[in-house]
Length: 143
Image (tube, rainbow, N blue to C red; front, side, top):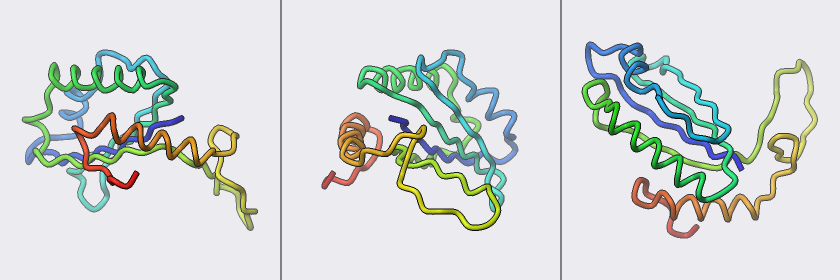
């Protein structure tokens, strides 16, 4: 399954995206297929939005990823670059859709990497993720 993380941080006054990137950029990889997409908010150019897509197959990979990221943040803190309020959202990718063609598009069921999405497996992964991240985020207790 592909784990999605969306992290929003606001640059401190006088700081630039280049300052952020220099401090944020990882010196150690996660050891799992990963893409990080970074954007700046058009309504607030000081807001940096990082979207991470990471393919995880085991709970150990998830634990390792959290440990690596925590170590990176300790070794390369962002405290003097971004405001203390950080928004974090974590989820599981349930569908990839391509609406780039012109004209009508036929409905298709949810798929990831060309495979139908197993929503029961997604629900299990959401529960596991909520348990794993319980110390970091507020989760829906009904999951």
